[in-house]
Length: 99
View 1: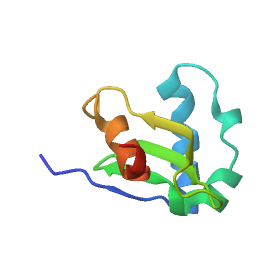
View 2: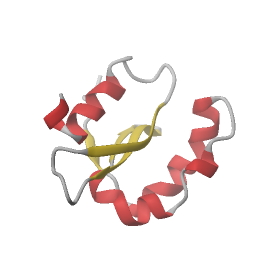
View 3: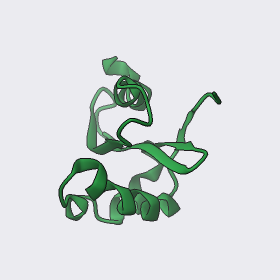
């Protein structure tokens, strides 16, 4: 199996994330993740891609006024595609100060 590595998100990842979140969460949640989060905060967000596309993501914001603080706005993992620890691994990569 190929090792899956997180990468920095890009603004263009929004389409893949938007098409997956409602299914992954099992209810309509896309309204809580407007495009502006990827347009403006993609550099502090992470994505894991697999051979068939998006497997996981974390959209987060690092505090500009206090580097010890961060905010995870939204995260998701494709059910059954990754180990249960994938999301916690993304959080630790996102803001290792709290790991």
